[in-house]
Image (cartoon, rainbow, N blue to C red; front, side, top):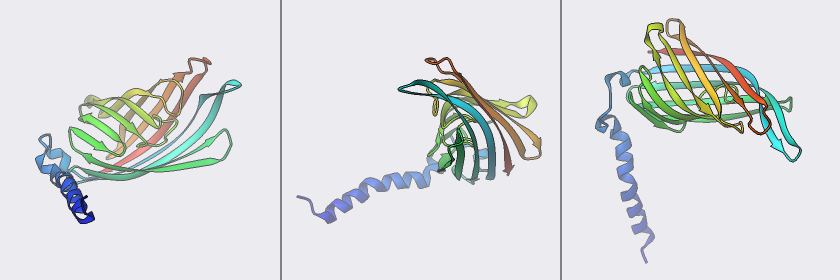
Length: 216
């Protein structure tokens, strides 16, 4: 039977390569890009309202809600991003509920992986992503969890995203966002969701507006 001391040594040997990879990742990953060394701060605000459908033993019901949220984050030099988002919502006047979630990621130019999801591709060109709990407001924006495609309309200096989300809904719906500059390093984004519950045939919807401040 192995001693406790030998077990601890084995555990250190197993975990050391992982931490070495994290520390050296900016230098050993082949898809690094000079632009990924830029640092910036980000603030996002959002507010919206909508409805979704839920089911119980009495059948299908619509549930109106209002929600709001905020995100504070920073992209450091090198592929590191840190932030936190918080969401607040009121479900049919039953009181305000809140949740906060950290955004910690290795964020390269072509690829990002962290606590709020995965991105493959370039924000300034075209990318695929699967994200959760990353952008306020959680409910009427693009949902608690989503997947889709995004990119940039260079002639308009605007960014777009479209895809689908389910949570907190019962049926997959269409979600979209358009983001455009209204002043230097200031961006306004509009997003929302449109869906229909298949069992009850109720329409589900949500819209929101937000502001992003970017400082390079």
